[in-house]
Amino acid sequence: MRHELYKAAWARYNEAMSAGFYLEAITIVDSVITDRVEAYTQHLMHFDETHQQVESLGNAMAALNIARQDRQIADDDEYKAIRKAVMEFNKGRNKAVHNFVILTNANAEMSVDARINQAKDTAEYGREVYNIVNAYTRKQIYGGKK
Figure 1 (cartoon, one colour):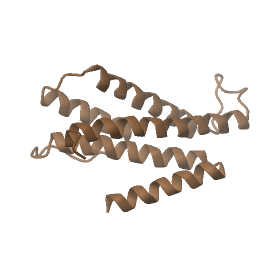
Figure 2 (figure 1 turned 135 degrees about the vertical axis):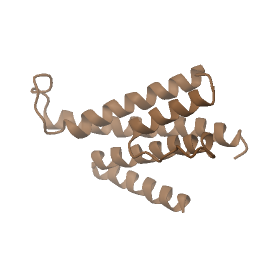
Figure 3 (figure 1 turned 45 degrees about the vertical axis):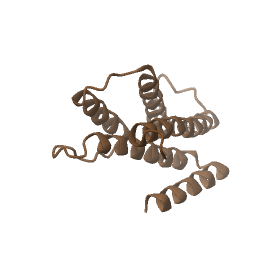
Figure 4 (figure 1 turned 120 degrees about the vertical axis):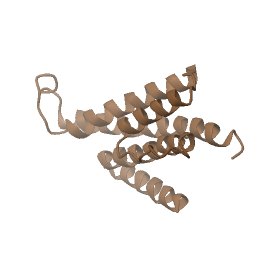
């Protein structure tokens, strides 16, 4: 089932990017990043009754950080870089999605085209973040075997 979901997600992401529907692409890539973070958390907490699936990327990262601390897994440079990239994407996602229409003193001069370009950049960055998160979590879960 996961393979089918990912196949559909990446097809929709590609369609959305081609059509200029960058906000849709952002939400799709957010979902697949969250899934990878959640999969790693599930791997760490497999037998822990307190583990509950989360529904947002920020909460998924918080749960993963707690799981790693509980398992006394040190934050190496690679993990720190991934955590930073995920948080940067999350910040960009929030900015692109939640501030597309909202006017503030900080963005009052930002044109529609600039907002669309910001969303495009965020969607593209999200794909990059997914790639590094996926590689890292696969290595942690499967030990480089898969």
